[in-house]
Length: 299
Image (tube, rainbow, N blue to C red):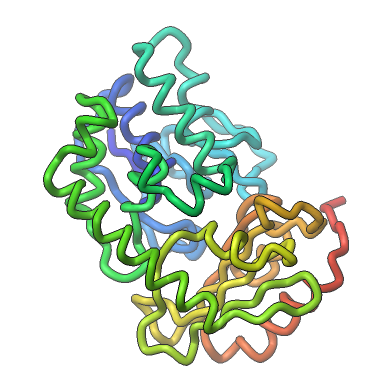
């Protein structure tokens, strides 16, 4: 069997849990949700898909994203929840050591953005928060590092994982990136009504950093939209939208909104990718919907 998941902390923990309970015989296939949606990933009949949209060729599917729900039979488990890892953990009761509960709790906390102001401003003080920030697919996919994290977390405590030389190096990189990212957020963000709009399209290379930092820098906003060119496909636009974790008040179901623009996600956060030729049509509509702040649900 093979695990197919996405390169974020939840996906890494999903892989750890699935290695524990299933006969995994091939390396993890790391993919983005949009690649699944567009049919760009070859799914095999014994694949386990986790933390990604469903594909009817797979053997098992586990997910928690609002826009990925389906209304046909499948094998696995789906529900809206803080993390996909938590769904896998519950699906195999009694199969895991106590230490896996700690790992799943961290995945729940980070994937649902249940963070304090101090955890956002000083992630280096919090083991799992900092570790999660080292997992990035913005520019140069690092499959070897993601696989290394899975292997380390299967065998070691988070303290021991953070002591690993490669992990420590990535943590130091993240700390420096966050400093630059703070400066760039201040420079390229404007607030429209209650919407913080960060537009990095004028930059040859969009900065990366703490995705929650913007909520502390612009506390008057209750939702944030980040616009950039896709790092791997410059002719595509990358949009990320999230409710503020410190200023509740956004009523827009973000995943549902972005599902109309070749994306999806959760009610409180989501993303989409589309060709640059569509930006003049799509982007004003997305921002207008966020400014209107209307609660719209499916029938």
